[in-house]
Amino acid sequence: MDGNGYVTTFSEGKCYILKNGKPVAEGQRRGKSYCVALQPDKYGEGHAAVVTANHKLWHQRLAHLSPSNLLKLSKMVDGMTSLEDQGNASSEFCETCVQSKLTKQPFNGTRPPTTRVLERIHSDLCGPIRPTAYIRLNTSLL
Ligand SMILES: [Zn+2]
Image 1: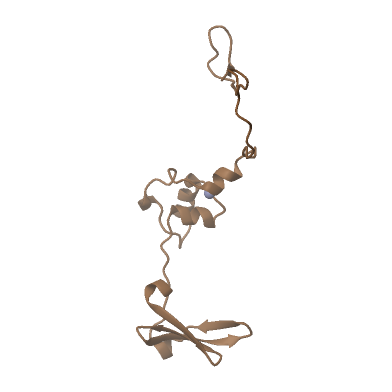
Image 2 (image 1 turned 180 degrees about the vertical axis):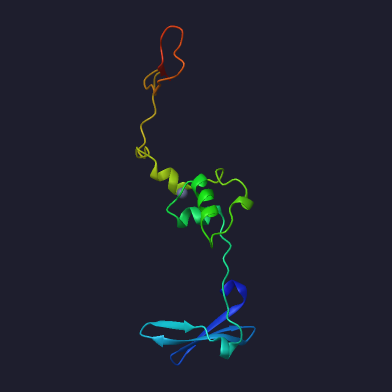
């Protein structure tokens, strides 16, 4: 609300939300919190917040659901922003998803630099690869 020109003041157990100096809502202190109640008869029409959610926000809200399932879900339920109009979501990068799918921890330690050729060799096996090669190999050493 602060970014939209609203000002909130606190005094004597009450809080007031003002826009352009005019009160739009008030609340009462209850313990350590303030409860704001909408009072359309006192402050005119009710105020509602409309949040336009995009792919990324829905993805985060729904426990990092896959883009294809998000699209299916948006067609099945009411109240969810139509995601079909917002383009392709599969291209959006989600760091949380990538980190949650990691099976190994990153290499944080450093090793001393090598001094001779072939002192340290980095390799990995890749496979099985289909179709099998002419000489019946389906694994490759990288
Ligand atoms: Zn995610």
